[in-house]
Length: 420
Image (cartoon, rainbow, N blue to C red; front, side):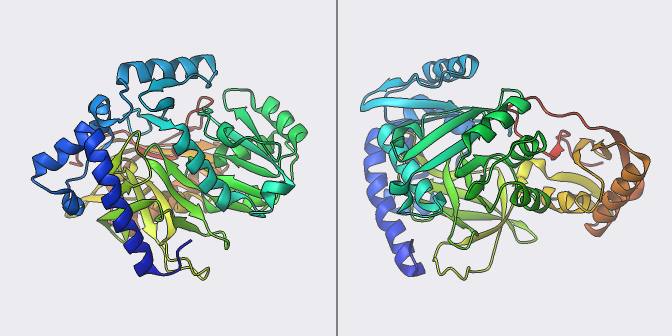
């Protein structure tokens, strides 16, 4: 909860230097990265970034618990199939929890965490999410989590005062709605598309706080969930760490007390994060490039020194690459979501780039008026970004709901070549 930027940055530097000394001794893959780059640990800011594919390729020598990727994958996939998420792996310093990322970028990742890391992670989240911290630890809360997988993170801090209930996304929506109504949580956590579906299925709940996770939160869904359930905040986390949390004013702030952020500019104010998590030791995250695209905001009136996230725009590999008068034009997902969000009767949609000049637009409901206005708003938005819309082909289809447990991606680039 730093309020002075210089003090926060000094804290980061001290913690990272201490962290790297330990990690370099216990993670051969991390030590080799510095050696190959010809850098001392003190020049960690100059270390070339890595990504998820490299992290998985070097998993066996990256982790500090003596784990093997093949065994971690076996345990994680078995848990996904059986829906029993209690098994752990025996690490050199105690039991380790294993989980899988959703693989929305095409590379499914494994994440591992010790009990100490799970306790710290849960503690930070509760500090920011409990609406009456710290008295809520004594008064008690019922916290409902709608998740694809239950990785044991919050079971670590289960107590008489804090009751956590896992709602499995693979269960029928009507069943989840009935269970939620019966549970009557004081805090409700889940992906916005799932919470909306549960609300539309008749769930009745009045939590003190609703928390959006795992998916991009759009303004229309924020308004709907606030009306249906109550005050809403957002959390930004990934396989690579706990990245941003809400402040007392409800704005999203980077978790800079535990994670250092560098930025790759993408144009138009958008940036791509390169993160160094100086609390995670079992699976070190050092100068790791994310696929996410963020738009940073102005300083927040709450007074926190950590930077504010104006918007999580989506994934970089979901940005459309379309032809313009003088070459390819990058169109960010949130720009297109904003355009389609202006269609009054549109309930659901998915926009996919299927070719150099081809788009597939799935709509619900697929009515002539809705389809015409959606295509009109889409063409208008693309024109504003400099796309040559006259050559575009837009194929309009009925929308199909994704399979249970699959993370929603409303804007997606399937075509991986360059525009003609």
